[in-house]
Length: 230
Length: 230
Image (tube, rainbow over the protein chains, first blue to last red):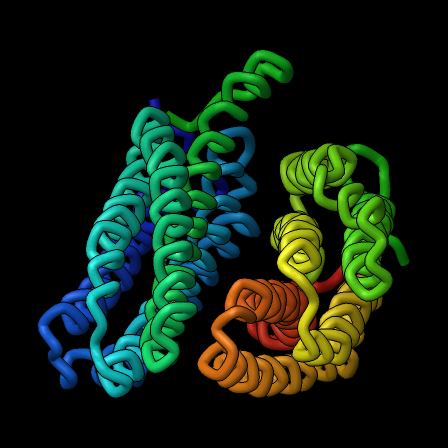
């Protein structure tokens, strides 16, 4: 049975629209991160510059998603899981926008790194980039489908990412101490590992929101007898 | 005239409670950041360790604030500025919790820096710390009082902070290239400037929420004739 609201439109339709838009935003942000990472690997300066100038569509879509979510909150007066998923969507929306900003940072640091001159330590990046991209992909999927198991995988991968960053940090610090001329390049690589780590942090935020949306349901459902709309 | 809800409790009372709790959380987080910054300056290892072990109260208060906000959304069905301020409170709450985490990071990096041995480049930090602390203080104040002018000052200070970080970065990179034995200490200082920069970013997020809460009111008020509760 579908819960109808005063507007005559099932709230689930609004929530599905919201999730669909978040998926598009996630795919856009993910594509830009991928372009920056591949741009560095293939020395494609044009691809890097394209990411570095930013993407107005991301900001416009972010505002559209917020607007949609606030209208649902104001006009449909959701409760229980519907309420949590809409508020979480606003937070996920902010995380995706920041990941978009970090993709710009990745492109800019890659550009400077190439200008300074490549060093062999660059091989610390591909595995980190792969994990960060996977976490982002899984986090969006987990949010849209409410998949707690997938959200759990994102949290586990964050430990992998942090450990890769620590390894990279130690190796790059050793390089800087041994070969001072490599300092500018090594610092940009270090910065790149930090950007990838922060992308992982935002994916982790999204995964934590999945737990909040789903686990909150069980608790509050039992406590207040509120029922979800599907 | 006060807008009453079906629970018989003016929604403004709930919003005031929420803001009061956020102010307490902000003061707690700010005190811990201050303790970390002063702990480094005065070489007070005990103070640094105290911050580094974290503060369970911050996490408990964060959950309490979220819970309060969700109850307001579910039970009082707010619209217009009330709705925006409650959703923004949930975002501000998350920003404050992350600033708390960054204060832990500042304490940890300070501890390692002291272990590696102090270097004269340390003087890049106090001004950055001062700006970051001021931004945090102003951002919370601007949110609680809805002061757009103060929020604007936070945004302006973020440029100052970024420019101080860039100066620090160049100077520390030069030190590392010239004096390889200073690399470990210089890297921790660089990390500290990043943590302070990110604290500024979170303060900026809070300031942007003030604009959203207040400016959104004008736009939607005119468009839909919804009226705020005060």
